Amino acid sequence: MRSLIVGIAGGSGSGKSTLARQVAAALAPVSVTLLDMDGYYRNFTDLSYEERQRVNWDHPDAFDLDRLAHDLRELAAGRRVDKPVYDFVRHVRAPNTVALDPARVTIADGILLFADARIRDLCDVKVFVDSEPDVCLIRRIRRDMRERGRPVEEILEQYESTVRPMYVEFVEPSKRHADLIVPHATDNVLAVEMIVAKLRDCLRAERILQ
Image (cartoon, rainbow, N blue to C red; front, side, top):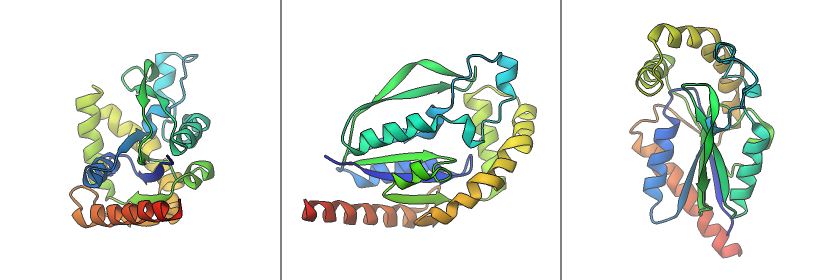
């Protein structure tokens, strides 16, 4: 069984993961596996905690793109993978992994999915979520304070020093590779319907060709 790979890219806080979950729910009863690019941050265990705090986590070099490409190829071929888990509180990779079983559709989301040619070439359908920067920042502040225990001053400093500059340099330009650009992903029913319709067409076409 080959798995269709859907890539959903966009800035931090743009609503990528929300859109991925909405598409997965709308595709039922088609089986779907969700994969987040955040799990593929490099494991900088050779650095101290203070040094890890200063890493530019929004640059492509911060990601283990070789492992991400490998896992996407495995899922596309219908094989199970063990996805890494990242600990955002300690800025290291967690010791445990998450087993992802192959499904008819794999939906991957991440800020830099389309910035690397190997990754975007593995995507059968590419979607870019183009949310307003102020909306993204508000969502990021809420998430980082609630889920990662970070003070607002640290969140804003990181946003100004790396998140926004890397968005301008790498993330935003990558949307030219997208098949569909979605504004305001949250509760965008029409966008979900369009993506699902495209995927169902692809699935039907594959059954005809097989």
